[in-house]
Length: 510
Image (cartoon, rainbow, N blue to C red; front, side):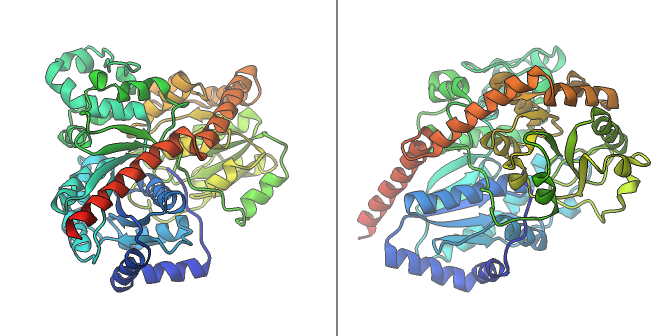
């Protein structure tokens, strides 16, 4: 997941106008009537890891394919989401609208036993009436509804308004393959094979999924997760935030409906990597500090907008960074015990003094070669800086793509959700990352192992090999998104389908 940055006042003012329903309705009507542009709607489920790629997809549909786009944001906290939007959205185009649906409060029905996936499903379900009303109020309704993979229940709204329906998978293609194959596997394979006997899951045409890497909701036979897999396969198309050179084997299997079992009406379109662009005007203490460091000498450490470590692990990481004797920037969040995803939907309270979380004297001892930043830093800008030589990451897919497009190799430290699968893709399938075997044990990783891993990565030949591979993929990513590239052409195919759909609807109503 990505971080946020503050935007100029004039953008705030512009967004404030767009958030009002009256200006929204008038503006969309004016756009459609005056330009004849294809109008599509996007739905982002809660969490910045979903919102950011949805925003980038919307901007790309506007700028590269001439669409008019409305983005509906499902939220659990209206004030928090508006603040986040203002930080990630530099919207300068009259053909892109962002609409915050009324905040959904499920707090009375949620306790510690309710996982992230179920919470998201509950919020999306409660937001459907608001989404339906917003679309119904439009003078000209969208021709297509594109939802992220956690909002597939919104397909019922698309069907009511006879809209084309697409799903946007904001993570890797391997996770998509597991998700769409899961409902069939649940029926055909005995539970003991994978869960009790810890045998790998064999997905036809793909790398097998080891028990230690498998998505937790799959292991739990989560009904919401398997419902998603079924609903994804009913779409007119599946957009994935990846590109051919990144996952060639998995994408080949997904295109072969005999292997993974996707319905022929659900072709897969790799349209990535879609990441937040660098804001060249953004400067501050962090970037100024980086300007003074040697090329590729700094390790950037961050666990995303939702990831947290325990207090003991935070202390061990601090010692590991110090003992590695490597330069670093560390974005620190307050520790949380027994919940590595504590800040996915919410802030974890008031930020206390650094000294509460670090070994005594840590900041003084590391002040010459390290920079500690509380809670948030401009991640995209940091990763694009020439002084950055590596990224110690929770390997959320947005962060992983941001690292790849900037040619930065990774040390992967998965925390929750599908991040174990992401880590395997990055370290083993692609070869742009390394990781410690100790992470698989789920225990606390000690300072010695951390220091050795960092030195090996930043100094030894292993790091050089990984660095060369990620720089090659950086070039491939640029080509994929360029006019005529594989990802550009994939999205162009979807755009053409929407244009044909609009022509057919106009012919019926003409």
